[in-house]
Length: 68
Length: 247
Image 1 (cartoon, each protein chain N blue to C red):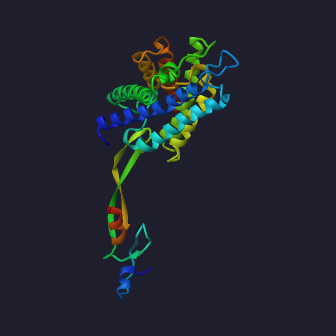
Image 2: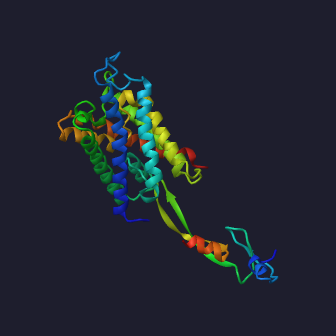
């Protein structure tokens, strides 16, 4: 698989990961690996942030959208 | 997690809604049925309009309100809105003592405010005709029978809570609708026996409202609605832990 962002720019780069939200192939330069906070609880216990964080690979567009 | 004060406020508001809409539905049914002749002394007015349908309507008013509060405030406080539930979770070491005491206090305050707010919304007929939806054993039902009925009803409610929400393997997202419908079903069957409180706070609010606004003094029945629901919920939580434990 090739990096979609690079392909749009006319470059041919191998993808090293896939954005978990949109499925876009991403090269090392365009892949963003970020830890996502995990919440547990809800009825009948108040929701709490856990110590554990889940790593995610995202593209820049999806990362920006999720931060909003 | 939000602060204990905010969680207690959420419990207070949630229980206020429960009493306002749930017990309020019983008041409205009695007000609509006021003056109608009932077939038996066992029928105090609820049931004069649509038979068991009256109880289904009251049960659904409770159930839908409970579902709304669970989905609305469940992530904030856990939406217990019932001292029996808080005590059962505490008794099985799932809930800290300080939080449990604060929740129970907030639930009682919320239920009292809900009753007084309903009386303010409807007027004195809500007290004189509807008794603010207070629960009491129906004609021919003894004190002990009412305790047994409250015990069994709350046992089923707490079992549903354990299976649909507390259990880590429960399917997420269904708790509100399942628990709401469980309460509606229990009230449909047990309403005309003990009043189907299942919740000490839900009974405390109307009892206090009636006392303050010149209605009936029903406090002699209050132990029914503490002993039955609290024992029922604690036994159900212990039962679920035992029955679901893998060897």
